[in-house]
Image (cartoon, rainbow, N blue to C red):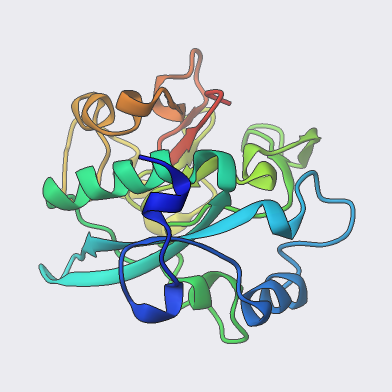
Length: 207
């Protein structure tokens, strides 16, 4: 499926892919999530609108911002997750980039112009761009799928999810990964070698 075939305006509430509106481009800038010097320009970003299955067992329409080069693949994965009834707590343009605070810390998101995060073992930041800064990574249900280093997570609400054998709704397993992101060639931080795992993190290059 081509990008042109998948495109629809986000304002219609229909699933599809659209360019940023002028207001969305402004919000991306004013939120600080995009700024001059980022490795991708706003004109190369797209808004993917898709249905998702919520923890409240109902259907919602959500939006996520990604690089135009991966937008079709991301839409395919979101459709797979919806058909699987894999629950997503929040996937909203306004929650990520709007003027109001995020409703909770469990926000599924993609584009964020920042450096790669270091392990909780060491803290600080890595001197390289995160794949999120290119719009080529997605964090899915961060609370249920925490970033873990040395057996620790900085998110207190996610500590009960460090033990991955106790599978609960919203937790990504290897089987779920194989049925979704693996089908479009994306890697998963839950498969990283060593003691650091990023269970929420999926990216085009696996990093």
